[in-house]
Image (tube, rainbow, N blue to C red):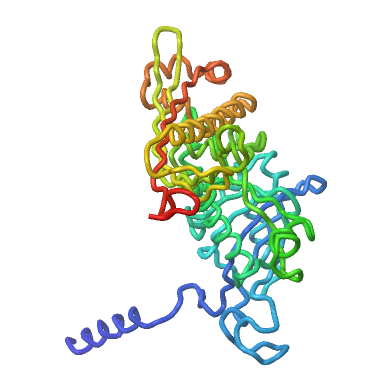
Length: 411
């Protein structure tokens, strides 16, 4: 009996160790989804899903039917397909009727919502993403203004697929300009699960043909036949609950970054003193911020403190200015920069009151810092928000003039 038992054990171990894919999910039979977009067809009362799927023949370097070449030659690197359904999940499942491969969602990096759907409500989409095990919580959400289908079918210069172009465009914009609030999906869930704070999702504007020509070839230089990007990043959709209630412009999004300390790099021009013409170009490379509630009696107040460090990138003033020592000029530049930051934060606060959307999370401050007080005011928070006193304190420090002390002089 021993040899038989040993043989049976060895057979079981060998079967368990044998390579293969459970439930016939072999990699070569899967279609890798790169980007997903949701819209809503009001006339039919159906959800509309559009996905961008990688073309393995082109991206993998296989033979191309048109020219027999390797990867990237002759054909598009992705395929766009869409379907409808009464629920978001049914729309996803309906995609199977038009494809030869089973879709795999773990490589999806960007999830887009049309403005129409965002204003109707994205709660059902968020519920689907939270439940479906293939979707990853590190996807980047965005609300699209314009033709959603055109964006999903567009090619981005310098990138192998439209989805990769969108993903990199978002990351590059976030790091260089801070005009796109980069909140991943797990942060949206966290926001919805907390009282006193609303969602804010970045905006992508689809450009019409030729709308971006000045940026890639035209009067500004470059090739006249250069391909313009199909979209531009900047601004944000402001929500109340799961419904979009309005747009935030670029400076208001910058104000949100200043107040929350999430921005990485900012820049803006400061006029030269005494109205002499020209500007100092300032880049902010460090921002630290804090928000705290100040409750005293019946008066509620929030204090926002921002400390920023910046440097001079270029000077186009008519007169020579020495930036190497602490002078009244330096102090005036610092005050002007601090005022610019303050103005953008206050513009963001005005939008929050106008739309009755606490996307900065001022109420959440009281919920976390003053829980007893929050239980008393939670039911009246929307009314309180409209008249809440917010004191904005900004300290700006101009450092690092670089190797140029003043025009024509170097260290």
